[in-house]
Structures are given as structure tokens and as C-alpha cells.
Image (cartoon, rainbow, N blue to C red; front, side, top):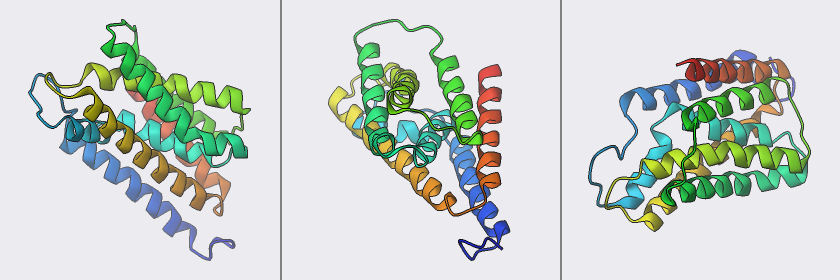
Length: 203
């Protein structure tokens, strides 16, 4: 029994596992949209894209989760850093700028955020904000390159911005709830995220 929440530790663990299970199910059920197909509704394509990849889900959700334990400025600014990085990354892709190792960068972002969670690391706003933005530039670049031909850039961007915010705030909600739980659960969760990131990077 957790003294602060009044809930059995097993229930908290079950909720975490259920969340991860839903993420995995969504990833296995769908593939990234926008590959070689015409999508008339750019907004829908952009909205679905971040939800269809385990790498995107884990990175954005984990960043939101991690941000809750940061200083007030970093905690409040994280959604802005996330969105700024996404938009810059997509803009680079649309401008025809070539970035090497984007997929590796995405996987490494999952691994590193997992490590930050597992170690309960707290970073200064300048360092944390820059790190988050750099992580998201890789994700935004992938989103930009995978936009379906004929889609509206503005609608597509609006879609993935909204989806990114939703994932980030879900992560923040879980992180807020976990403040009242045993830190060992948070560390274990971060370890799982880091391991998945390592597997993605190795693949």
C-alpha cells in the first residue's frame, strides 16, 4: 500500500503497464501514415502520425513525464520546447535540408529520456530546454519528410502539433501522479523506456 496515494503499489504498477500496453498495441496495429499515398486531409495525416509510432509516443510522453520533476520554468516551458523543436525539424525537411542519422537520433532520444527518468535527473532550464528541442528536431524532421504528397503543410503541421501536445500532456499527467508513488517505480519505468530506446537504436 502506498501511504501517499492510499492505493496498493500493484495497482499503480498495473496502470503503468496498461499505458505501455496501449502504446504498443497502437503501434502494432498501425504503421506510419503518409508513405507513398495521397492524403487529401493533411490535418488528419499530421494528427495520426505521432500516434502511430512507438518511438514518437515514447519520446514525447517520456519528455512530458520527466518535465514534471524539473524546476518551474522548465516544467512550464517543456511543451513549448517540444513544439518548437518539432516545427523547426519539419521546416528543415520541407526546406530540403539533409540531416543524417535522423532515425538513430529519434531512437537515442527515447533512450536518453529514459535514462533521465530512471536517474531522476534535474537539469537547468537552458540545458534541459535545449536537449528537448534537439530531440524534437529529429522527430519533426521525420514528420516533415513523411508528409504525403498533396497535403497542406499548414494543416499537416497543425495536426502533428496537436497530437504532440496531447501525448506530452498525457505524459505529464502520469508524471504528476507518480510524484506521489514510490520513486523506485518511476526509476523502473525510466529503465524500461531506456531499454526500448536501446533496442530501437540497435535495430
